[in-house]
Image (cartoon, rainbow, N blue to C red; front, top):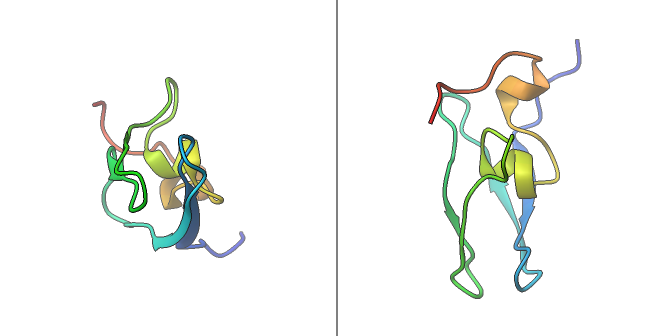
Length: 72
């Protein structure tokens, strides 16, 4: 099995600003505020977290082929 990647570059769909972040391993991140334009990002329908929607890497549970966090 591949090692889990904890770094993900999250890109704002509004302004295009990108920033590398460390993903939590024990919780989903359902909200993320863009540092540049202050848009509050939320997961796209069908995605469990903002990293799965806007990140360069999916969240750690998805990388491990596990279900992500509990239902929102």
